[in-house]
Image (tube, rainbow, N blue to C red; front, side, top):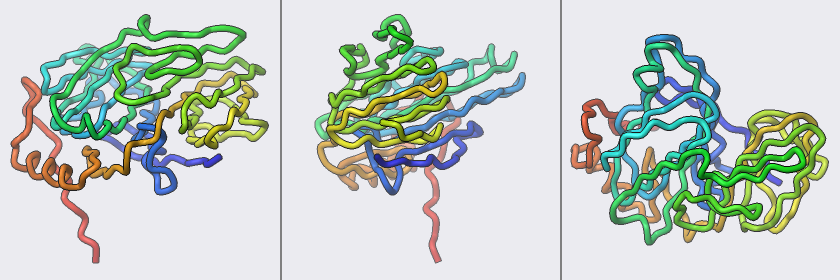
Length: 289
């Protein structure tokens, strides 16, 4: 097993932990980016506000444990996302979106806690139109027995299949284990990793650090044991169909696609989110001495 300790980041004022990408692990299945949006209390008059920004070569999946986010994109999507729901956006060759605290919650104050992951698109889906879909909580399949609750957020696993339209073999499961329960992780996918959100959990007797990403050995079927009530997610899937480059909000198999996207965003030659004016500008490259 490989344990990755996430680095602390800040995205437009929202504190996060980011275990992927890491120098020690660039991807797990199609997952190339993993942000844990830490539980944050926004006072009245404040909220999360991630301005208009671009993407290529990926799908974003937002999943909340608490709070609410408004998602808007250049396809015309305008969707409130609440706990237990999936917000799924596939970029195609060019998309822009915003995510912010809705006005009503901004006025009253709110809490926010959740995850956002990026899944690299297969090479055959790096071009073309984007797509957005929203999946209410009741549409996601759940197994709940013997003190273990598994919700399949995306992909397939544990005899469950999510309706989220993933583009390659994927596993994304939310796990809730009561104290003293055990769960065997089947070798259904070539690559898998476990992220412990809260609680004390062991893998084959080895304790895991909360809020760390543990990459499981290929082909292994480890046993999880909950020393306390635990909340975790399991991600994975088939290996990528070749290496990926990541630069800012862009993911691509060909560096030329990233250079092209950077130039277009900088020039304003990009689809825009209806009604939005503010945007996040292209970061200036750091000059090394």
